Image (tube, rainbow, N blue to C red; front, top):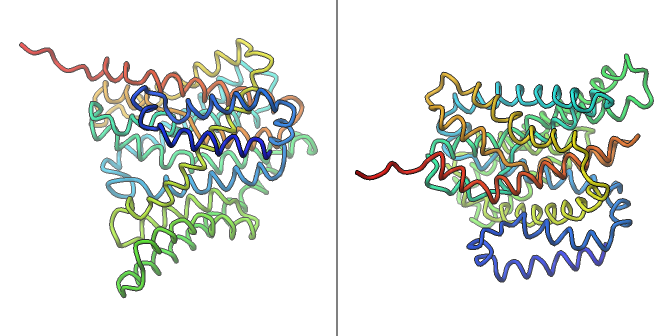
Length: 403
């Protein structure tokens, strides 16, 4: 563990010194840190499996996701649901459930030996999007602004919406080994539903209280710019900790806290106030990519079966593109924009965290399959969306030839 910490620190320092050079060569942060994690993982293979199964790893993953979910929920531009709330609602309320269903059905077809709970877990891993593997997409001015804004809104909310479903599936998968098959779903629901309710109540209360108090303090000149940034760092940690203490789920609470704070904060857009939390979240993301690179050595040690590879290819394409295009049909987005929204759906930190949490809970060999799917989907996304996206944007939004 100490060796990995020292290695990660050195890699971050080295990356920081030449970050601009890496960007010019399209060596994205995930590529650099996944590669570094692979190199370290090759020398710590046996110790890595023990570390991934440790309870500390599970709690750290939950806290990291809590912070990132809070950032996502508070960092949406142009209002709570962006500049095109109807299109955002179509993506989150129609395309997202459709993608989950398609992912489960695809898993049932390719992995018939796996329980439904595990297939639902895998769907929760492969569906949420995250622009860490391809952050340049949201800055690429060749893509229409409304498309980028819609993608930003979707990425901000879809992992938080999937989280309660993931919790239910995780509880169900963990309970099936000790419960009759007929009662397992009800046992899982009885545990997951109160946890989710507690998390929503805690997150809403903490977010609303901090937003109202910060509004009052700012009107009276009691806060500084620095103290506001610190408050936003504390908010997800506070909601996470209180929810865990009350037997709720921490990352659902942090997500709801971010929504409540964003909605009730009277100071306008929060992008400047979020700078400190953004930097902390970025550092945590670097650590997650490094851990993921190390874990990929363990996952890929025995190769990738063809069924798993086919599932991952379809998860990166059909599972997202078809539901998105269908959900946006009838909106003011033309077919080209709908196809681009569907195609530009990189998978990143939420998939990694959900995969690691599943690996920690599952047994009977299912944990290995889940870790392998997580690894192949995220690595595939890094290549397709991180490196290959400029070609797709160029092909879709090619300038009209001059006469």
